[in-house]
Image (tube, rainbow, N blue to C red; front, side, top):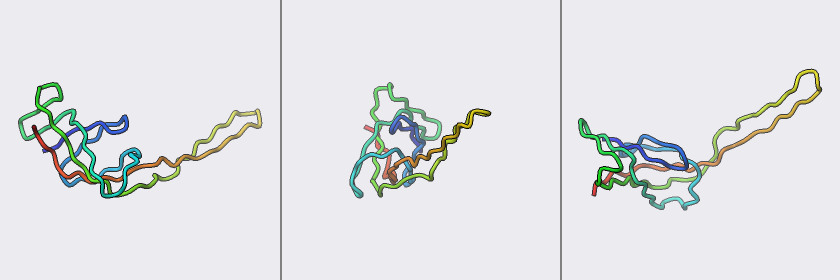
Length: 102
């Protein structure tokens, strides 16, 4: 069984026990979070969000961190213009506890 959840503008495929890196949530390590599932697949059965059955995914926050630095380089040829900067996206690592159907 797996579910598709939307966290921070991105969609993630989640099963029970999976560890995910999502955009920074601002929660303390050890806290639990719940997200509504957009889609749940259980074998042959598919449950969408608008089917009247509420399905939530519960996850535990493991900690915060950052991704590797992404370098962005701008250059205009023959103009002596160069610009470089980096970005380290903040993230939160979570562990999925389970998928509950209501």
